[in-house]
Amino acid sequence: MGAPKLQEAKAQPNNAEDSQTQQRKSISDLALIEAALYVAGRPLGLSELCSVLKTRSKNKAKRLVKTLAQEYAKRDTALEILELKDERFVLQLKAEFTPHVRKLVKRPLLSTGPLKTLSYIALKQPVSQKRVVEVRGHHAYGHIKLLKEMGLVAVERKGRASILRTTDYFADYFGLSHDIPTMKRELKRILEGEKASPEATQDSTTNL
Image 1 (cartoon, rainbow, N blue to C red):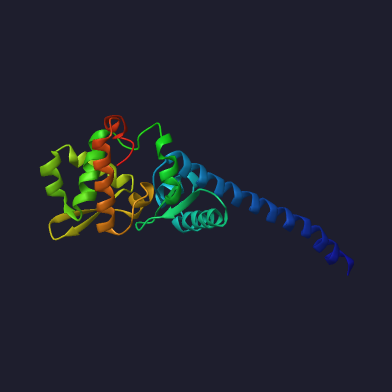
Image 2 (spheres, rainbow, N blue to C red; image 1 turned 60 degrees about the horizontal axis):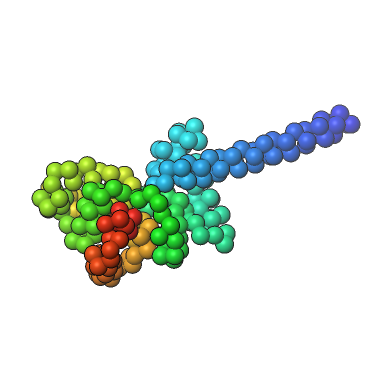
């Protein structure tokens, strides 16, 4: 009668150790996701997060990144993890902090060419890819590809046409309204202010 109890007593520490090991593994996975989002500086898809976690389970990656996003939401911090519509996730500055620290940015998000293409799309959206290329030239194809990869622009198919729009991430990153007409007015004011400023050329790749 005593032997089973002894075996049960021996098993309990192992179970506790397994639980602690599992907890450490979970924390490690969350840290890996946080590190990946921080280093990337752009939205990451579930496939990319899976490669960092060394797992094939997109459900696992999604569950972990959402757990991390919830942890960030509970913190009193200037950062947040935002989920985009195409199941990509980005670690970014909260929109309300952007106007206060934008002038401190040393490295522009985009070079002049892609930034001008992005500005055109934002002001004319919804706009066809064909029209963007007509206005900005054939190099705009590369710009659009880059902007899509960065999560700043989304593409919608309408028949044979590809219609371009800016994303919520674009609005949040630049501290703009999600309401398109309001966003366009804000952009026009920013661009007009840059033209009037003697430092417009220097700052044009930092702010829209």
